[in-house]
Length: 196
Image (cartoon, rainbow, N blue to C red; front, side, top):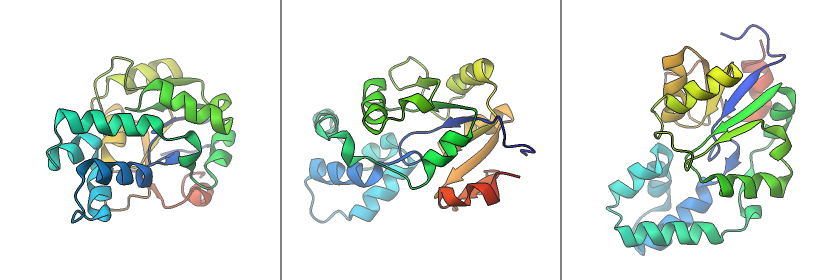
């Protein structure tokens, strides 16, 4: 548990944690599926497990995967909205790092658009050569370098590596899981739930 939030080093997931990207991804996913009968809420639920899970569930072909990533690349950064009050938490922490499966250039594009690149000392992205979450190797690397105090993510795969390393965890907008130390529905709750 965290006893003092001051000077905190936080490892953040990107999609669904810092930025509300899933609505955009859901729309692209449905377009690539080209299936009117598939419910957007169902797609959203599968994407929240992981993109790999969702694309496997809907049996995406190689061509559909290419189409998805091509369409994603065309989305302007302004379409990816940051969650309300998350920047306040970023400013409060002493050090912020990101671990994401997203490509580094895409992360930088969005952070730079919002002027948020100044909030992060390091980004480990999907093209940096680490195994995908929930493998803990990227977290081990960041923890050795930065001494992580808290990991915040929106999916279990974001916090499983932290649990294995004995780091405090917070799940954002995901109360269905029972493995995190803290749960937040919005970042305004951060001070009551995490800042002990």
